[in-house]
Image 1 (cartoon, each protein chain N blue to C red):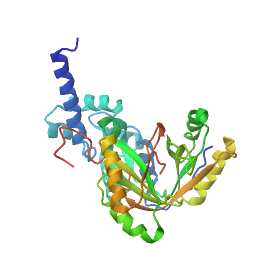
Image 2: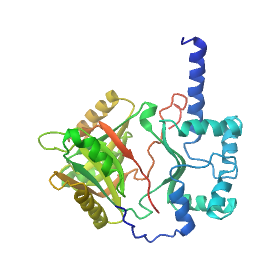
Image 3: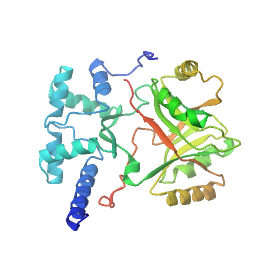
Length: 158
Length: 180
């Protein structure tokens, strides 16, 4: 089942890859965590710090810390789709992205060609934003709220 | 049983957690003693930061702690949201099997919208290129005997907003209400 994917052209060396692959789902809770990471990778604490800073600067990493579960904070994510006529795509896209509640907006190959996530505080707010999106664009947004979540891996092999 | 003292204790625990989450929004400081740096920011001891983080990492509020990567720069340029019409009584079992495949990062059951949208299971498959995603999908269909199941891969062609991996840019926090 595992296909060993071809590594892509990046500026990452073996140690960078090891760092990225080994520390996506946990990090030492020790006063000197970077020292422990360095011991594992066979490099100094200083070099770990330099490497992480460089990976952040070069845009490989978003952040180093927790990946939050927004719903535990009382928020609500709702995947939403629209069928946007191609000749209106840019215009509608601009309107939709202007909503602060909209995140992760992707164009996809389907009749429903615009897919984004609404991040709201409540169901009531979600319904209101859906209505405002409808009014602002003249296109009906279809919400696909999650009924059940099976897997959040979000791990990527470097 | 639920005395005022208990409620006060619960509330103060909640506030402690909120403060820590807020301090962590931009990530762990990249310095020799990162927990001590956080402690100084919060006016706590380093030990307290570590033990609160330990509790938080095991809670439902944090999916995981560690490096949050951007998948596009790492070469993961193709992604398909594959949607399936799975019989309701099989959804749990099929989803559990799908989630074991390399490249599958998300898997959700969502409502059908009949008649035009019969799909109730959505899984995201990432890959370096489109062909690799299609290969992974074909393998999955074959292994799990899903050939007769109606499904479609919806490849993304463009990404417009927040395509990184940042799931929360403003934790919904009472204490942090002034920020973000």
